[in-house]
Length: 376
Image (cartoon, rainbow, N blue to C red):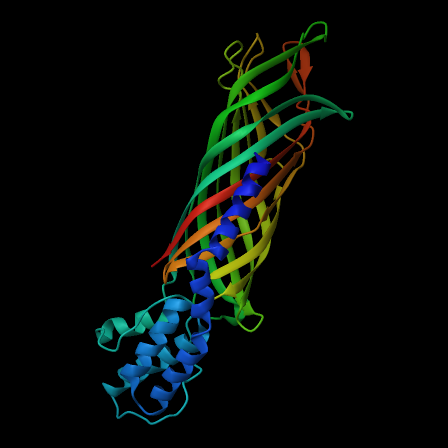
């Protein structure tokens, strides 16, 4: 599974860069300085319609071009001013307002809509297909007790807002995002059954259903770097992860539900290789506060329903997002990722004259998100 994901990513990249589309992207990139210079020339002579036409061509090639967006913002400001006071002559665009989102503008737009469109498309929605390979294992004194492993498939959706403006209190441009993901499949269990009376174990392998759900809220800010070719971001993430394990065990029908609330801190950097293509890296550390991490085991084999308080839980996730703009407000996104969770031993619970404890465990996933982001 891991090799398949890596090969698919490499082959996709090669096909793109050797294809006519890939070659044309690099050729178009060379035109941007010329178009900007021509637009600026029209602007200096007061030919704003022609200037807008040239800068709109730039945005088609580079939806986040700072020069084009800055000139367009100033032209719209002049259009609004002309309705109230005589126009002022100037030779350079103002520095008061800039854009950082894709868009196409025309002075013929209704004036009531002009100022809003001159800001940018700040809202966005993302929808991805999620495929991964998961491996879970339980340990006691360095010995592996059992494990679950297999491929999952599902989806990831997010809805967010990115401010186009810089705020000093945020040290950047604030953003907020809510997200939800779900993936599932039948995976393989490999372990043993234990006799509660004698403590003896018997090897036991079976197929069982695995369902993972995760949802949360991210609050953060971003700021430009590397001469506006890069974007640095940092955020706080608060969410919950739920894993239902073993519900379809055909013999014992024994199910477990692991769930915890986590608080994460993340940071990332995206870099624009060419106007329409960017790559990046992102990392997050997540911790689950005490009292908010549980395991509920359904009754099976004469053992009643039992809820454990899990020990210390922490996790990390690494992502490598790749974004290509198909349109000014629509991008194709491909993101390989790696996720790791570590769970320490639970408390000891008295059950029917005996004692039960959930051992320490760890989970790692290697996966790929692929889908689209639409700004509006």
